[in-house]
Image 1 (spheres, rainbow, N blue to C red):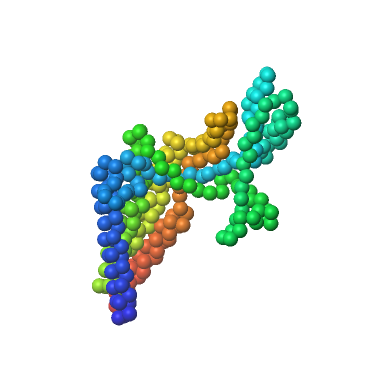
Image 2: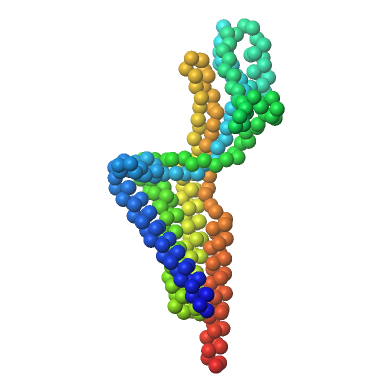
Length: 274
């Protein structure tokens, strides 16, 4: 019993420190929001209403090996060497046609390790897969509703951590004082479970609203010295944000609360029988 008391005391202290730290972080973050540019001396806020808030997106790259800007008597334009069969046929036709004035832009890559830049010949060419990575976009919308959604989404995780650490702090304190089943213990675990589920639902709704306002961003490459050299090289597509692990943890907390409630009922029946 003494070992349980010591462990619960340590857990209570840790949860209390986490709660106070989260309070401090939230307070400092809110204070920076009231500073016009989010900068105070050497301190700078990464998220601020004047700079924008992060949104998750998937990245798709489109990097051609070669670009040809051509100009003839009757037409002009650009062609790219790519994975598309029809585009490559047109590229080869332009490349072989001597009637065009052509300018080449050749994209290349280097593979290296810590000591050698000349290992490209010993390595199979890397292939960049589409939609294989997630990146963070910083959006600063002028629409007040959309901006409010991003602000809520940005502070949602801090609010969740603050609430969960508070519940754990009270829970461990309660167990330290009375290591037994009781209705308040069940309710605190149930609150944690509902908060985790609610967080995921609100976060998902916010990301869906974000997708309606900004479905994607297209990046183009352009060389002013080459006429018509503009081509799309990267697309960013906003995505729904969710975490199944957190949702599963929330459901587990609800099941645990049911189990503890059952134990509490058995304990009451046993006390009445005695």
